[in-house]
Amino acid sequence: MTQKPKVDPHVGRLGYLQALVTEFQETESQDAKEQVLANLANFAYDPSNYQYLRQLQVLDLFLDSLSEENETLVEFAIARVKTVKSVPVCANWILNWQPLGFRIKL
Image 1: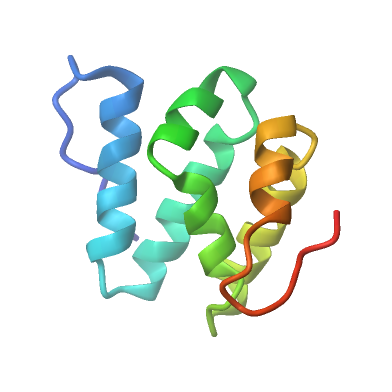
Image 2: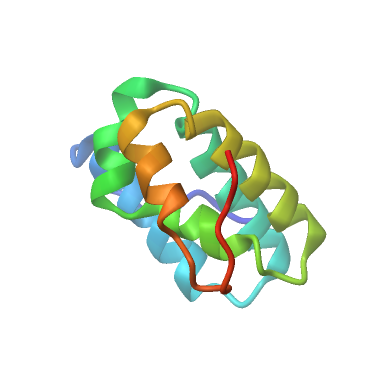
């Protein structure tokens, strides 16, 4: 299991989320990626986090994870995309995301 990201306790939620995003992008461990994506997914439940998640492009991480070979990452990504699709700005972002050559239907 992955250790908590090394974050100064005074950087707040944005700093913590940034550390999670960085860890997800830099780690080679699939277990660590699963743990980090699960943590980011938990933050997606709270609308007060949406500004930070948008700023850090976490929705892109979820969408990019849809093409992973790791089924757990895909499942986390699907669940979070479903969670945030009701937020208008997120829904628009999802509808216009096409790196895999298809449109996502909400």
